[in-house]
Image 1: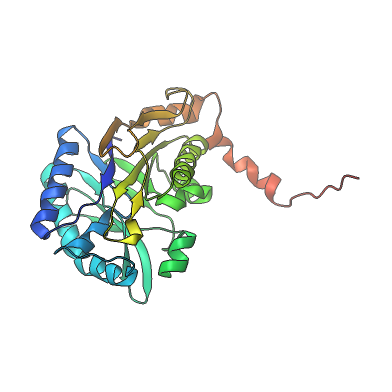
Image 2: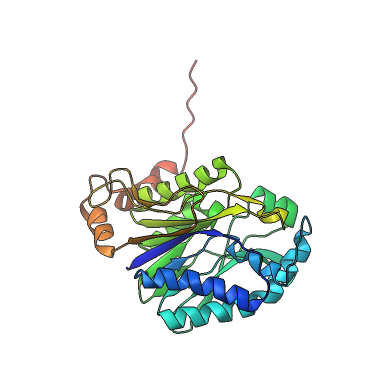
Length: 294
């Protein structure tokens, strides 16, 4: 694996595409300059595309989604150029988009040699379903990269263990968790989910939150959190499971080396062997017993 950078990222109203490119160039350049080979932007980090030309959307969620969808290809071209020029992999900030008759929450995984693949949120939140009519994407995916196999769980997806477990069983030794949460409780739900996924699958989990307040769109009005890198609290990892943690609502990168060797070692010879013992659950869960106490 490699050095990974997780962004605690604030949105900005953008005047034009040059403004967008200048901002992303600063962010990517800073992380790459610190030696990071994999950069993670947060959920809804792509929403600022909708502000080009000074647009303010208020409660017009669907107008905002259309504006994001229209600008998506150009944003990806800019990020692909940055990935190539710095030799890094980038998971872009996700955003709600239209695809055919559906609204999806989509990010893109971009490689330094021009490869690009969509990454869809699988499990929309209640608000996304009720306010946006959002649908979940297809199946779980593992991205085969020069850095090794990488999984992704966008925000609420990290609270459902079987998604991440399927990626671990397909070879992922690192899970990316971009998030957007407007409350303290929401941040902790995602953080606890991320740490639980690190524990049960015994791999690295990298968490990048959206932060800051934005009066130009209700959809992203308030955002709280801290970037972090987590692992199983066992052999070769911190006893707290927290490998690196940024400040709350503090913009910038949290950068941490995430090598494969500690993952292989803890799965092979840890104090506990959650990854190995996972399958033992199946026989005990197949037919739950019912016991009546009187």
